[in-house]
Every structure is written in structure tokens, then in C-alpha cells.
Length: 302
Image (cartoon, rainbow, N blue to C red; front, side, top):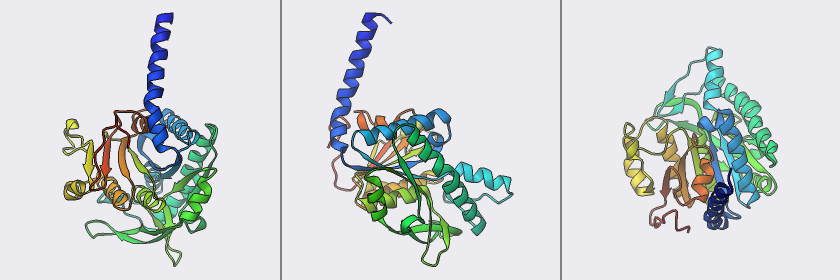
């Protein structure tokens, strides 16, 4: 590399750092809940980059809380064991056997892999599930269409004392399973769990990593990406959304209506998508804001 090339690269790096500074100041001390899923959770290099990014958030004074599912892993093990795989309105139909398997995969395998990867990148993490410390109290949930989908849970209460205690020194990593007052176990949609955790903690932002660019008005048209929408705009459009995007958008709506300042759907296939959304002027994906909140550009941090 020539001295001229080095100078250009240095200048670019300095500009990037200066661009990030107001956002680091804005988010310092704030809680950011991250729903971790999709390619970022399965592709080896993206997994490492995610862990590095989350470690950086902790280093600069942000309090990250990770909520994860593990749909592809659960499906893989279900198929190996000959269990039926079925979804309704984007939610997994869950028998008692499915929930037992989900708990083994999410708590015993996926959760511990995330914790170990974060630790490898310099930040200690603690793995939790809804059962630990009574973190989640659940009840049975039906699909939006009203269809019975088995042991799928709705979170009725989050024990925030557990999370605030852990988050002082560690990164909480939460597997999306829980139980009701009678001890019945439930599989919980990870998007719903992230929304409930974010609202209960009064998080500044909740981010949903997925495998699409964001909310597309027309799934066949990549140019139809919705960059920013209000809660009322989303509420009016939600009935027309299907598949796996519906639970994510519903979770965004529940988050901002529950007091979270903003909810963002982020393309986890893009390297460092968390940092691009949080610390750059352009941002990423689709942002949902509470009604009545101005829509600042990413070049005008609140």
C-alpha cells in the first residue's frame, strides 16, 4: 500500500469514527435488546462478526440483551426424529414433544454456543431461559387466526430483576422458552420474547435480525422497502402481511406500544448490520416508531 493509499484509508477510518461518535454518546448507558436469528446465527463468519459487534457495544457502554430462537436447528432435529413440522401464521405448531425438543436444542446447544462465542470475543455472557429465576411467566397462545397451535406461549410477565442484575456485569443471552404457573413448558416465538423483554426493561431500542432487507410492501419488489413507519401505519397494514414477517412486525408494534423508543428489522446477512444501524447516518432495514414521534433522519440523532 502506498503512502497515499494509507492516507486515504486513514482519513476514511477517521470519518467513520467521527460519524459513530454522536450515536455512541446517544446510546451510552442505554439498553438495546437484540433478537438474534437467521443467517447471522448459522453462518460461521457472520456468527463471529455478530459476537464481535455485541462485544463492542458492551465496551462502549451500551447494555445489550440478546434473545434468541433456533428455528432451523429445531426443525433439523424434529425431522431426524420424525416429528411433524408445521407452521401457522408464521408460528411453529408445538406439541409437548416439540417443546421438550426445543428446550434441549435452545438451552442445551444454541444458547451455550452463543455464550461461548461472546466470551471468546472478550465479553462474559450468562445464558438464561424463561425458567431461570422465574424470568418468564407464560400462558397458552393461539395463532392470530385463532387456530390452536399447541404449547406455544404468550409471556404474561417478565422478571426484570433477574435481567438487570445479570446485565450489570454480563451480557444476558435468553433462550425463548418458558412455563406457566402450573409448570407446563411452552415454546415462545423469539420475536415475541424480544418484544416483551424490551418493553419490560424500558429498552431504548429493540433490533430484530432476519434474512430480508426489512419490511417490503410487495415481497416481490425489493424497491418497496419501508424505511420508517409509525405504529398506526403498521397497525393498519398488518392484516395484509403473511409468513414469518408478520410475527416480526407484530413484535415491533408490541415493542413501541409497550414503551420502547424504536424497533428495527435488520438484515443479518449484511456483515456488521448491528453497527451499521446503530452508528451510521444511513442506518439499516425498517424502523418502527411510536405514534406522534418525529422521524429524525439518521444524520440527526435524537
